[in-house]
Amino acid sequence: MPILFGLELVAQLTERLDRYRAIRSESGASNHAIDREIGEMYVLRRICLADTDAEALREVQEPLRWHREMGVRVHERGEAIVTLPTTADGSKIEVTEAECFGNVATVTRRLEELRALGLRKVIGWFHFGNMPYESVRRSMQLMAINVIPKFHEREMFTDATKCRLMMGRRSMAQNSSTSVNFER
Image 1 (tube, rainbow, N blue to C red):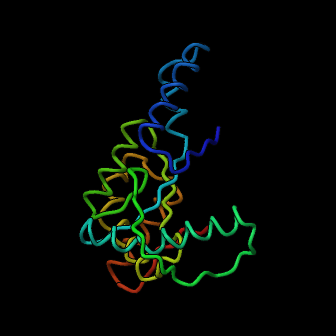
Image 2: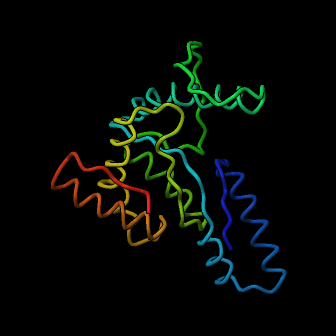
C-alpha cells in the first residue's frame, strides 16, 4: 500500500497516523500489522546539511524563495515554465519542522521524530529550487557519511537509497570527488 506524505508537519502526520491506526484497528487489523503498514509509508523531506544550523538555514533561503516564486508564477499565474533568475526581494522564508535543515545532529533528530511515529521510509529532497550543486553534493555526502549509518540497521530509508548511500559512503572515503547517486 504505497502512501506518500508530503511536507506535512509532524503534528499533522501524528494526527493522520492516529486516525489511520484507529480505522485499521476498528476493521480488525492487529497492532503488528498496522505498524508494518505504517512502516511501509513514505514521507518527503527537503534536506540540507551544513556544519551549523545557521549555515544550513542561510543556504536554503534563496532556493526556497526561488521555489515559492516558481510555484506562484506557474500554478497561480499560469506562466510558462522558464528558469527564474535569482529572486531579489530578499524576504526571509520561514522554515517549518517539516524541513530537515541543519547540522548532522539536527537532521538526525528530525528523522528520529519521523521514526518515532512509525515511519521508516524517507524520500530525501536535496535539490530544490535553485540550490547550487555544491550544496546538494555536500548535503548528500554528510548524509551518507554521518546520518545514514545511524539509521542503516533501522530501515529508515528505502533499501535502494540506503544501498546507494552506503556505496557512496565507501567510495567517498576513498575519493572525495565521488557523488552519491539516487537514480536507478
